[in-house]
Image (tube, rainbow, N blue to C red; front, side, top):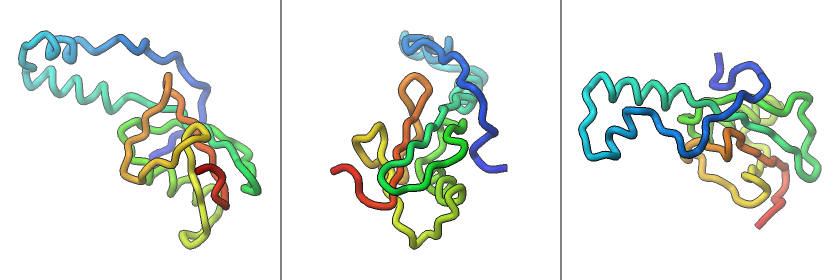
Length: 128
């Protein structure tokens, strides 16, 4: 199974200020036990981001444009997945932008604003 799961409606995301108890314990100057560190690690892995794809310029529009992905994945996973979905070869030009503003590096992690990551894609350069 790929890093992307089946599409689903976005679930309510936790509040930005909330932190797991193990993380809060660390911020107070205490040390984590191995068990607490493992639990904090599992909670981080369980965090999902809804990736929404938006066609720009002459790029083909996807029939389904949102998927869930683990927030710990690198952006190269999104690039490979989009190429596969569009049926594009590695030699075909593909430009990706986050929120119509910047192009992330392939080794960046996939984080979103309030659990959403908006990815604009195009076959030609669209922004800066």
